[in-house]
Length: 411
Image (cartoon, rainbow, N blue to C red; front, side, top):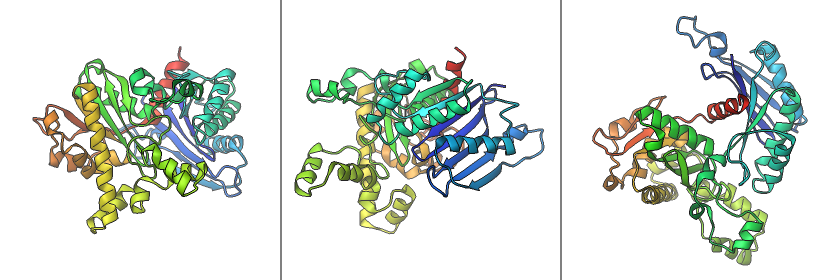
């Protein structure tokens, strides 16, 4: 059995999944949070698959979850808590040790183009790239160090959110600012959500039964964070997020595209500091800035009640989606497949319908009944006679990380 442990570390928490790669089923998952606090928490779930519950002939077995509250000093202590949970509740990592450990790393800069075996030098480079992702990479480094201490004889692999977008051409990733300044501070578009865009585009190609190399695709990853990517024959050629995950679409708390002069005005006239501006754009903008709520379900409920601020927020959100859809249709010269994924993309029909409502001229026709229908797997929501196939594709970033990790570990 080829088992891979996937770790997604933040500054004060980490999530994990243990995946059996022979069936691509999750055997266990968990969350260790509030690291560095006296009231740390740990949750560990052993899935039915670990007990053979995925076998239709086996007795019905439910997932089993245990929770603990205890002080967790740092990531190393958190990994010790995780290992205790595996030892006490299963699956046994002694009987089924992971073949490799895969780590989600948000920013690989222009240095990492593919999943990479973690060495001391790679770890140093990931740490150095923290200047480009100060909210994400430091936590990843802490998780990597703790995991390598916990599994010293196991290959560790870094899978970068930015790697999938390294295929963008210079005209797509270059900002039109002073060239020497941009080079000195590595200012360019990097793009994010790469593991999700890769997973979804490949799953969509398999679903429609066409080679990835023959398809022009647009993938909307719409969650609290949101991005859209133009994918030409399996390669990212443009994406909405940029130097940071702030650029692009309207998000739950992030502004997305904004005239830089707005920041200059706020600095000069409102006397806002760089930290205050950073906080404004990342935590107090987007849907929450426009309507006071970051969750699309809350926005839609307020739209139903006729709340003007919510109506405007929804309209701005849709306007930005349409703008990028049109731009990427132009960049690709049309599309064969358009997919929606992540929390909003998978579960909010009205967003999908409105985002594509004006694209009939480009062969994009939504079937209202299909779009409104609920489902758990990949499903078609375009009309039978639509030249462009429109899909809902549930994303699975952890599985994508596990696949790439296994590929590196076996080479």
